Image (cartoon, rainbow, N blue to C red; front, side, top):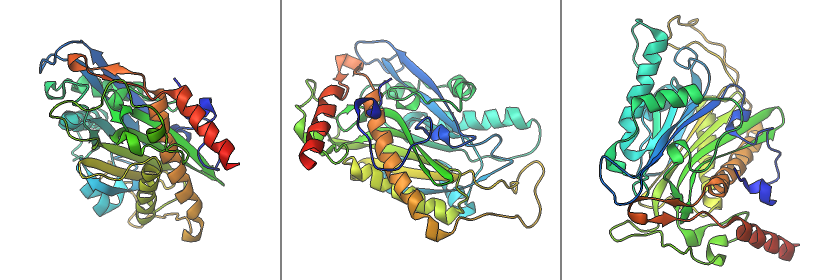
Length: 366
């Protein structure tokens, strides 16, 4: 699996965590189920299949130990379930699922079923957070190939170690800036705290692609296979989901501020929140440990909460911007060329040529 730093492309100035991944935030785990099968003509219900599901576990049993959290919408042509209750309560009480646009419902229901398997017969309600981007160019989107057992498999696969990137899990069939996209991750360390980001990148136009300030989208030769097919929406139509995790003790309003800064990382790679794009960020903090109001054993009437002073938050803003930018680039560096229905091919970002362009521009700048 290739990453930007393997090609001497270093984004920003802040240090990364040991894994340069969202799992550098202690307690966070990530698992994927990747579904790839078939080739040839598109036959709805049969394939070809290029899709999957990614599950991010923010901590064990978040329904009993919720996390302060907040969403941010750059452009709303997309879906992130459960966000109304998160915005209202300021708390994340579920695992987070990422998948394709038409599999949001089955992933949401499967997360509830998993929670029931853990909680047993106790009465509860659940509003899981599930985000989507559309993989309908490379995948039989209307075949509904993601099923409950695939969500369970992703949960079982979840690990606190290195995160698979590229065409895996929910990112399997995604396209970013005219090249193959998918899942990417990165992290930054600011003093005592870590910020980790994971993206499902399916957004952006090729000519707008920027890497470390270099307009590589305009400088690289066009891919041999055009990204568009007859009847397909224009470039820039797509979506990106950005998950921001931190162990800094943030309250919900501060989480909202970090989520908002993820939009700057999207912009630094050339994304603009286009009309046809669902660009949504979501931030959660593991820095407090409180009992949920609807937990099996509710906590005290008055919870003791830690909050980072706002005068110290700028470093976390910078960390979020840098990690979001690098996570997008890592998704593209990791992804391989993929053929979808009807022989349609989306090429991988040419890594060597891209690295050479960045190197050349650095030399000119110095």
